[in-house]
Image 1 (cartoon, rainbow, N blue to C red):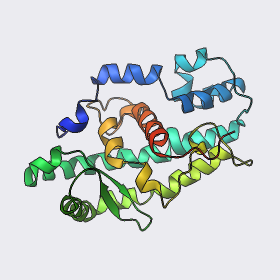
Image 2 (image 1 turned 45 degrees about the vertical axis):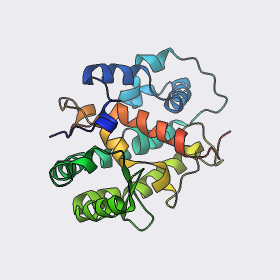
Image 3 (image 1 turned 30 degrees about the horizontal axis):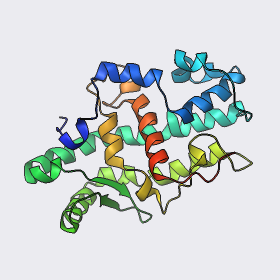
Image 4 (image 1 turned 120 degrees about the vertical axis):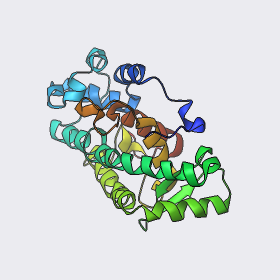
Length: 235
């Protein structure tokens, strides 16, 4: 069951509207990547992009064009493949965790806090809460073995996808332009925000499998990168 979280859920939209808006307003970074692939006439290789009419209407303006194989690797790793699959699998474990927290510490469950994974593979809490609350959350989060095991895989998958995005010249227009590594990931990507934003009551088609909105995933991760990471590898 989805646990109400006023501090976060006020920003969430009605599911139907959320899907429509996501399809029509993918992040600038993803739009740029789609423009480049559109120039290669290979959008049909990525169904989620091929069906996005908004991406078919954009003009090709970038001077750097992804090779089809490179774009496929980036998409299958970061946008619609390995990375969102990890968060999709985390969703049920996170919801179970929040259900228990709502019972044991209802006030803490309502506060603004987040969590991520550090370079040692431990889940770490963050946000404007007391050190005591952070310690409590970290203890409880790390007791959730399934959640920890999935979270531990995120850094390697994300670093692989960013490397694909940068290509041979080490530069990118999309997510790969940001300076993200295994050491600073915990300060860049808030897993709780991703899981809250991607939760949906829908579970009827592949893009919403496991009560997980794949389109919203791309939107939210791109937003967090823009807010929290330094642009270091752009053209």
